[in-house]
Image: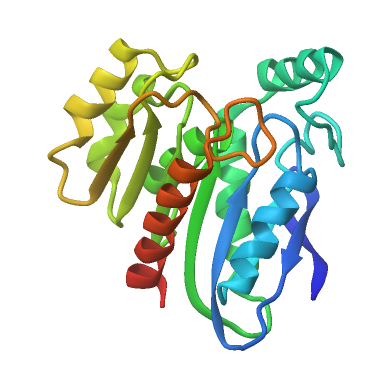
Length: 231
């Protein structure tokens, strides 16, 4: 079953897509979008988490730019749009909106109080920053672009974090990955996984760099991680 959640902030309200599991009570997983908005791919990921037994909530974090943005990665025009949204997006406000989403999602009828965050691409960066700035209970980062610029916040991590990085990521080059590894590899609450030969967005079904085997491996690790920390 799917529905809509309205999240309130001091600057206005925005909507989130909600997919409910078959059994309640259940923990929440907040699913953070890529640069294409809350599109069919993100709703599908939320639906998959609902099938795993979570209340899955996917907030419209581009609402400050334009509510309801929903494009694909299939055309050059859409890619240009997506990068425009990315450049216009305020990361700090986005993390504040995730904090507000966590608060609202925990109040959904049937939520058990536990709430995790998972994000991809831009959403991966936002998930990492959620681990340093919000009260979530567990965080799963997929190839968070720009994470290397924020690892100085690692000392603020209070709950477990799992991070998936593509070995040949065009947006997170080797030097950036080295910064991430140096900062987080020995952190007691972080778990790093590297996928050699993979490119950015290797876990996006239907994407140009999708790799079924490594996507399944990463998703299985995340499922085990959330099971251990949220259930």
